[in-house]
Image: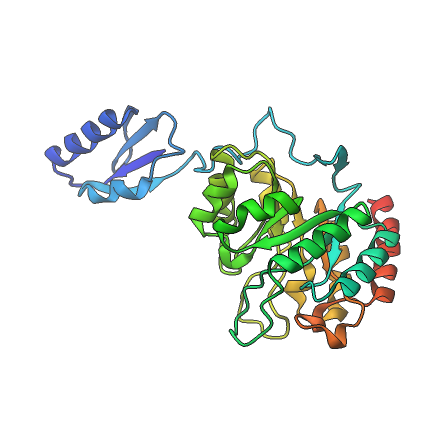
Length: 333
């Protein structure tokens, strides 16, 4: 960390700053620049909030060199790409494909969808049972009943079950039924929930909030990792911008940035970004082309009758075509 001292500083202010830094456990190297003093702060600054230094009157600016996300940060000891689930290794040449409806609506519905996505080569079955919706009048999911339907159906077809948790009190239920616990965009900074998931042994799928930076996304992952859970998958699902023609803007550059900064795998959810089914397949292929480790795709047996997000769900025919195209694309990468 580097601290630039204001020209014309008061000596007592500088002494107070240096005393604080030494007391905090850092070593200091001081140099005289062309116009101001520069302090080089030596030590582990990952758990230090640099903004607190602006309380000292002599501080002009603070430049962080070491990223604050210590556990998720890439280093030479951690491979950035491959990850394993149920003894199967996934990476950009063998991407994890999670597919299914936005919401579990009935046993017949989830069974039909699971049967089709399995035939097409998917590895995971997604389905919401607890649905945080913008409107309180929209379908909120079937709760525990829906979660059990998803779990039983996924096991029937040898698929990983994936569902979103919204309340830490539901964690025991999710741990007993679900293989991959999803944290939705709205809960990316629900720190009590993240800390509870950090004590779980389940894989956590952490979606990026639609108004959050990549650094904030990785800091949320840090809450899970620092509490002991080492199995975290990042999921880019689009961010809110001024562009209204899609539901959100799919930020594929975040895949590259997250992989550069972190050893965690990154998958992409083009369905929530697009908001309309016709854009899902092109965005899915683009995500794999930039190096995503997998995809999460909404699929429904009858999108026109879906209780939630039918407009962005692929039909069986469209999903089959996408999966065939993905195989060709991955072989060409």
